[in-house]
Image 1 (cartoon, helix red, strand yellow):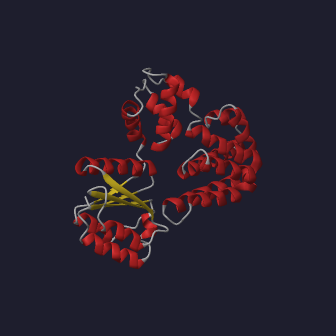
Image 2 (cartoon, rainbow, N blue to C red):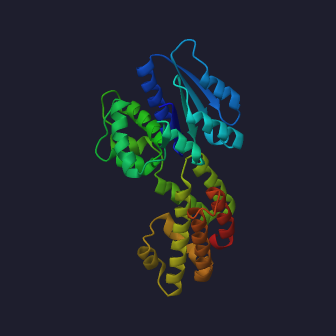
Image 3 (spheres, rainbow, N blue to C red):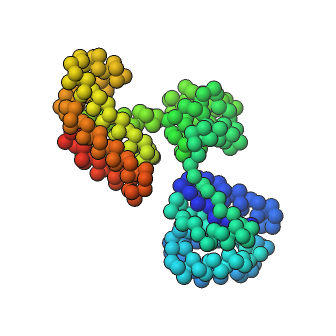
Length: 322
């Protein structure tokens, strides 16, 4: 393949596919000269000159352009690269790496026409991530996973392969050479599950209002890597519980009976019931409606920034959520 495009949200997969491509080229050509460019700042002439010139120390070149969506953002660059794709150099391989905003078009078709490939690098499903953990633990970290370990790990971390690989490395070290990774080690060394992290946001939203919830949202997204979809689910879930609790209380049910029906236990019971009494069913219904409309915007593409949408929602809910 003279041109390969790797596109998608999962940066770990893009790096892994890059290593695989370089390994194949080295097996075929011996040593390979590698040149990396940042597509946001690299000039068109620099990239094309590197592709078209002969290597001094090796028979083949691997030219990598990161931020490829930015590199092809200008029309003159896109057209020049389309012309290159019509007749790519035999002595070079061009690897374009782009995020989720890659815009497929004529260039992709020309890549496939010249025998290249456009490969998606999107995050796997939970089931795929569970299978990946078992293989990765054995091949990369020299250990085995005990029963239910992969499932628990994905439940806590999510299907982000970079984070999963980091946790596997840590757990393999904790287990010791030759020893398997157990569920007990996962519980001890891996942080809160996604559901537990979601409750962290829910509890802060009901107890502290907008300021505390915005700070917690920033922490969860930027530090813990909680996906935007989980944030939306978390907010909708807690406001649905507040709404349902408010209706049950207005119908004359006792708090304990209402909490049992809604499966509220521990600290969450008192927090939700207090919010339900303060809001009442009408205000809680309006808050829930605002949540559903915000989620609909993120899922239909009307929102260009999911996190900003949920930040705005938290501010909107502040009066009815405290």
